[in-house]
Amino acid sequence: MPENKGSAPIGAKQATKHVAVLGGGSFGTAITKVLAENGHTVHFWMRDQAQVKEVAEQRTNSRYMPDVQLAGDISATTDFAAAIANAEAIFVAIPSKAFRSVIKAHAHEFHDGQIVVSLTKGIERDGFKLMSEILQEEIPRTRIGVLSGPNLASEIVNRDLTATVIAAKDPDVRRTVQNLLGCEYFRVYANVDVYGVELAGALKNIYAIVAGLAAALDLGENAKSMLITRSLAEMSRFAVSLGANPMTFMGLAGVGDLVVTCTSSKSRNYRVGYAVGKGKQLDEAAAELGQVAEGIYTLQLVKEKSEEAGIYMPLVRGLYEILYGGASIKAVINGLMMAVQNSDVEFILPRTLTQ
Image (tube, rainbow, N blue to C red):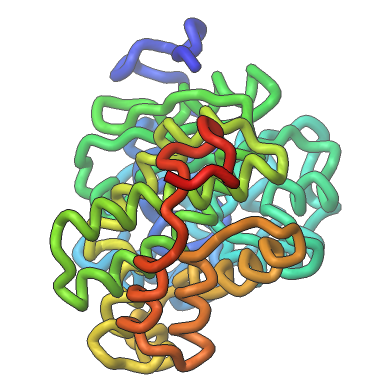
């Protein structure tokens, strides 16, 4: 959708705001850096006291962002209540497996009307809940949004040109986040399809693993292009069946995020797929990564959900057979190539029509 006309011009001096970032991983650190360099006071919450001490004293987060210097007004803390007490907006970058437990434990510390934006691209197993749905259940008195898009943290901290999407029903949430984060190198677009934007961000992690496998096997450029476009068809088919807007997948949160994670070795999920494609076991590949690769967990949940709902997802099924069923990569690829040749673009031709 078009940019919000109420947003301040990119690069304009903004009044200092108090904001909070919850979670000291790579993306939480990247967003903290953007906010602080935009002149805001950032309360940066982490569980690890040693990590807090390093950020406070050395202005670095070497575990996740080595060689990156954090400038500006950043207050690192392990005190959750203090971090969010005066925050106009709170950005949550907590891994999906711990997301609900952390929010639930501190639900009473959030204030009515506070803006809470999820940065986490994942799905909770029980009930197939997205992070915004968890926020709605645990802290319904807040105003909720989701930030997603082709946003590699390592490029954001280097101030490389990047665009993202803030999805929220409340126009004030969209406008506030645009004003807080927007700058010369970080462009913030808006959307109202919270579910679609968030689900796209979670689903693309699965297909980044598939792309990593393809790269490890030295498949040609034609094959890689085929995999990306069929991934887009598959993820949009799944999401729309659950209520998302199909047009969301034509934007930054859909095709934009899918392309960057399926073509870049900076993507954690891509690296896991590449390592497995080179012969490593999944546990070994994940351990070597040293960070959470959400696609590993999302794959299991989406496979179960798609089978339950009767949604055709051959790439999800094939990747699951490779990672958890001991199937050979080449056998799965051959099976995919022998499948029915169906509609190219989703929603144009009926799925029963072969070509």
